[in-house]
Image 1 (cartoon, rainbow over the protein chains, first blue to last red):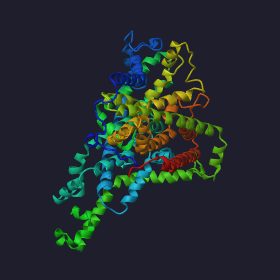
Image 2 (cartoon, rainbow over the protein chains, first blue to last red):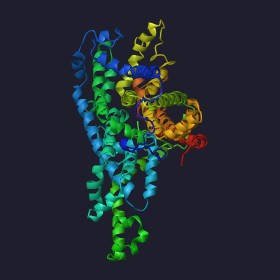
Image 3 (cartoon, helix red, strand yellow):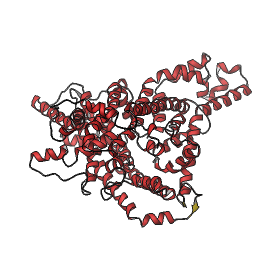
Image 4 (cartoon, rainbow over the protein chains, first blue to last red):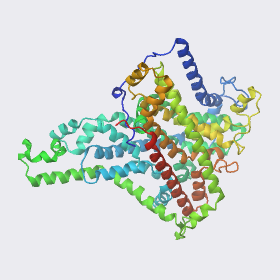
Length: 298
Length: 317
């Protein structure tokens, strides 16, 4: 993972290319923008089609190719909201609980571990760090069966504990790595000053380092949000009780009950399910882009 | 204190060090050690949840185990059964085709778009966002479901082909084409390697290009002899991450086929078959053996890449 060492923030990057367009004739530039726009449109078309289909009557969805609905039909949203055993906000709320706890857990436990790796000296630090990097590449399915057995013996099946507790135990090496990289970019003099002023390691961490790590924590929060919100496999194996379903499981239930009349409501709930991701993406772009450039996260 | 801890060798001569004696220093050193471990405490417990299952699954791979009875040792029987299991070979085939078709295409698209965007272009943040957004959504159930309808019999792909008088196949229900739809889905998410390429391209010093164009090097030669070598570590990084990721594809196959891997096992990804074995047939020993084989496959491919990288990846330092 250390093979990538790219700058984390905008300020640090060395501008090797001017931000203004400099090369090519106007015609060439125009052609370039035209192609980029066309490709972008093709990429966005499925999403636009999804949104437009969610407000079309079900029988219109496959009959009209155009994006602009002839008949606006918000009834799909009302119908989709109540189509399953529970109203859809129950599933949204379930997902939200898991997401919020996972974010809190990841930020807390990964920052603690990162501080130890970035700043403290103790026997075995290098070994543990290597071990931590090793878990980055470990495919999760290798641990799947024994973890399932452990969680079922703890009586955690059909609860959110298997989905949430590991996040409080710094099991996500990506975020530790991200924060180690970030903390290493902070001047050591800060820690020294705090310690001379009488702060112990924990207070130094809490009062001096953590407030400076807001960008890295924001990146962690956004990536945790997106991956947890989309997470399908974990809930699929650990959650059987329909009242506890997360949004992806609820959407799958839509597919099981599919019939032509359900297309509209299903697309409407699909829009509801991806809207928070798009919202977070727009709000947190800066952190996402810098985070992905640092760790190569998806 | 910690200025001194950074260089323990100068400790005795440091002007501030005349007060605490040797014993006191030892105590504070032990204290520091302890607080290091304290910070790592959650991680240590988390590692137990990783290390123990890691070895437990290796053990289970050699047993017959259905969750309800005690595991019984069967030696290599699971691996032998895998060797003779046509569905296992099918799942390997699906996963390999998916990986070796979609990863090179995504990386090529990612690099091409990154090169265009890197040339100092107005509206870069907008283009970057538009191209990146799909990669956040590609793994969500909503989008895979959407894909089923886009490629459905009268979905928009076939309607579009119909405009040119082409009768499109039934992409989702024809085993010949169902995997293609998922390859397209994976290529659609080329935005995340693209962002990494963009960050890498920003690091290439502009003066190299200036010097090369003064010497009369064409754009193609500049690309071939400056850009490619300098970003080769990033190409390598993206390649490894994309390979590891796509070997582990699950959600796409599950949602596209409603959990069966159909039609005719054409979307039976390796991890989907592992899930079926473990969690619908409760053959946990077999599933563990499958997990270890996948680990080996990923390890071998990563090792091959690392060895091959000596011949084409260029490290500046």
